[in-house]
Each structure stands twice: as structure tokens, then as C-alpha cells.
Image 1 (tube, helix red, strand yellow):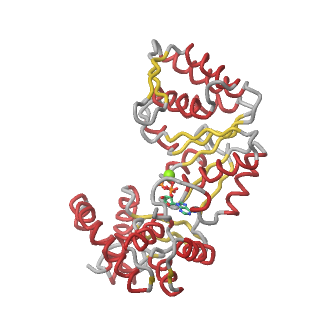
Image 2 (spheres, protein in one colour):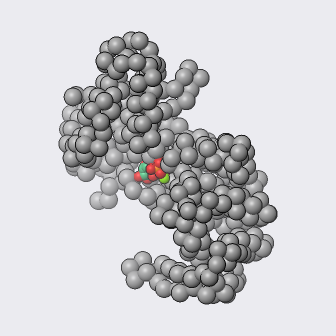
Length: 375
Ligand SMILES: Nc1ncnc2c1ncn2[C@@H]1O[C@H](COP(=O)(O)OP(=O)(O)OP(=O)(O)O)[C@@H](O)[C@H]1O
Ligand SMILES: [Mg+2]
């Protein structure tokens, strides 16, 4: 029996919980050609939501085409073009009118076209003579898509990666080309929320104010518990309400961790799941993570490590400069606390959540946080 709790890529709407409001908002934005930026804490479900949206579009608006590309592995503009061209080829199959035109267009780029011998997916290698030629190809590809007379939604995941490119003008180039298109709607998504915010909210940057923001919070407790109960029951298992509540509280409804705990509980195979079975799975997950947590310890300074423990013991901290927090955990001055928090956010270990009452800090990895509570 297949484990119904996904911990990898999006699989199907049946295994995807809620997000109805975000989904209808994003769908509406697509229909209105409004470009979007999707931001959230890490592992909250951004990528899953985009793929769920594309599933919905295929169902309800089959006239809209969708292209998804993840540029995390790209290192420069060449890689970007390659990933965009490959994703486009996946979207417009050969022997369709656009697919055939696309093939002709791609061939004009004089690429070496190969097919992955495992997945069968197309892979391109393009040799450029000059920088100008690259820019021309990128613009040409976007223009080609725009000219097909169909509405295309293009999602670019891990978009902040363009900041790593040696070509300093990538943001400006892309913004200029995109601005000229009429039939393309873009969704930008990224896991480094500070970089993403800088790209889209810094008035000195090309993408400033060019999109509407969709922020992704936690899934509400009620739909998540219904979802969990349903998936266990559908697979011939029983789970107590108390056990579900414990899962949601312990994982703080942080999607990846909630899914991972449910996945582990399911994999353990009990027919009837009570709180003891859940606690055993929690223990198992913390033990599994231990080798990595000890690696973190080696990577951090003693002060940073102690600071993480302090945050873990509090669960989350609203006032990292309060005398109470500084004194209780022997942190030192307020500026030391701010500096440590900033460094740990930079490393992706801490999350800072801006709220009306100030910034709340917590450890990103829920399992690490629970493991550290005990130190
Ligand atoms: N609504 C949902 N219902 C069930 N599972 C979900 C849901 N959203 C996300 N997931 C699962 O949770 C995990 C994390 O989600 P996802 O990878 O989409 O997060 P992300 O925000 O893109 O993370 P990152 O910041 O690392 O890019 C994945 O395994 C995904 O399949
Ligand atoms: Mg993602």
C-alpha cells in the first residue's frame, strides 16, 4: 500500500490538503494576467501549490498553457535559457501546432538535442558565440511564446537564483523582455524570502512593484485534521482525534514536517494509531536527524549554537532584545542577540516572521527545534 502522505513533489489533488483560498486567488490572478510573487517560510508548500494550481488550470481552463521551471541548479544566463527551453518543450508536445513551431525555433538556436536515457526528457546544449547572442536568444524565446496567440502561465521557482549569476544585468534584461509580452503571465517563487523580497520590493531594482504578492501561511487546523483522518481511514487505519491534535501541535502545522510525521506514523504500520504511536514516530524522526544536527554544531560558533538552543527552548521568541530573554539565556547585549539572529537567519536555520507585534523568531526545522529543546 502506497504511503498517502507526500514528502516529495506534488502528486495529486487527492493527496493535497486545502489551500482553496490561495488557489482561487492565484487562478483569478492568472485569468487577469496579473504576475505574482509567492513567498513563505521554507517548506510551507509553495512549489506544491504551484503544481496544484497547474493541475487545476489543466482541468478548468485547458485553453491556458502552463510552464514550470525550477532554476535552482542554474549558474548563469546560459543555464536559464536551457531550462526555459526544456520546460517549454515539455509543455508543448511535438505534433501539435505550437510544438512543431517550437521545434523549428529551437533548431534555429543550433542546439545539440539529446534525450535523457532514463526519463526520456529533452536536453539541450547551446553554444553561443557572444553575450549579445545569448540575450538575443532569451528575448527570442520569450517573444516566440508570446506570439503564439495563447495564454501561457510561466512559473519560475527558486527565482532568487538569478542573483547568483555572473551576468549583473540579468534582472534588468529579464524585466525588460517580460514587460514587452502580452500573453504571458509569470509566477515567481523562491525559498530565500529575503532575497525574493529584495528583488520585488526594493525600489532600486528592476522588478520593483511589478507583481502582486501571494503569501502562504500555515494550513488551518480544522482542514488539516480532516485531511489526515481521511487519508488514514481511506487506507484502512484508525487514528484518534487526540493523536491528530498532537501531530498538528508538535509539527506547528509547518507543512513539510506535518507531512513527514504523518508519513512516518503511516509507515510504522499500526492499524490503530493513538498518541503513543505518534510519540514513537517523533522520537524516530529526531534520532534520524541527529547526525545532521551534530554537523550543524560543527559548522556554528559556540555562541550561535547556544543561541539556537535558547530559541528552541522558548519555541519561538517575539522579543529577542528583551532583558528577560537576554538574561535568562545569558546572551549578552541586545546587539549581540540581533547579530546572532541575523547570522542564523542568513544560514537558513532561523526563521524571522514579521508581524504587527514585531518579528517572531523560531527554528526553521521543527524536528531540530524539538531535538534542541532537550539539550
Ligand atoms: N497542501 C499540501 N498538502 C499536502 N502536502 C503538501 C501541501 N503543500 C506541500 N505539501 C508537501 O510538503 C512538502 C513541502 O512542500 P513544498 O516543497 O511545496 O514547499 P516549498 O515551500 O516549496 O519549500 P522550499 O522553501 O524548500 O522550496 C512537499 O513534500 C509537498 O509535497
Ligand atoms: Mg519549493
